[in-house]
Every structure is written in C-alpha cells, then in structure tokens.
Amino acid sequence: MDIVTAAIFLALIRIGSVAFITSVLITQIPLLKAHNDFSTRVTQYILLSLALVILLGNLVPIVVDLGTVFGDIRRSSAVLNTVGIGYAFSNAFTSLFSAGLVWGMYRLIALSNRRH
Image 1 (tube, helix red, strand yellow):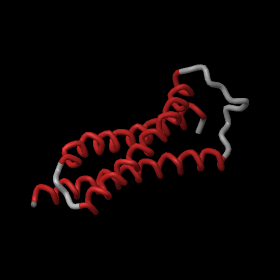
Image 2 (cartoon, helix red, strand yellow):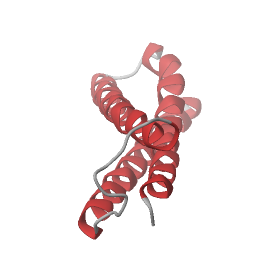
Image 3 (cartoon, rainbow, N blue to C red):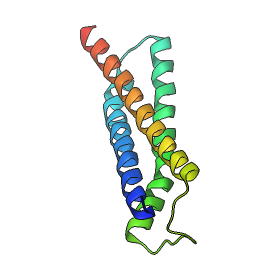
C-alpha cells in the first residue's frame, strides 16, 4: 500500500467518525433542552465533551490525509512501514468506533426521552 492509498482510506474512516459526531451534536441540542434529572444532564454534558474531543481530534488528521492525497505533502520515502500504518489505522478506527458508540448512546437517550 502506498501513502496516497493509505491516506484515502484513513481520511474516509475519519470522515465517517466526523459524520457520527456531527449527528450527535445535532441530535443533542433538543435533548439538552429537555427537563431531565441531574444525573442524566451530567451524563449528557460528559457525552457532549467526549463528542467535541472526538470531533476536534479528527480535524488535523483529516487535513493531513487530504493534504497527502491532493496537496504537495511529501515524505522522504513513499514506502510505509508496518508499525506506522498500523498505528494510523488503529487511531482512525478507534476514533470511528468511539464516535459510533457516542452516537449510539445518544440514540438511546433520545428513545428514552420519547417514552417519558
């Protein structure tokens, strides 16, 4: 796998993470306005903080990935080492799964609010 191909896959994974988190942030606006008990509100604000960390944590890697694909970012070698590419994909998938789990938690909160 060359660096451009890896950057394309990494950017797509990270953009998927941003899509989940954007959905969370849009969903949570009415949820934060609901009259919930204290522990639910605290949980919502903790999840809001986590969502913002995931969103902001993806911005620089996405810029680097897209710069690698479309820009003039060059490495001293076009060959990727196994440890480096494993680390990059591990981070990207961790971000994607974290975002998906936060999104799932917000879906549960929304369902719970509809039942009450």
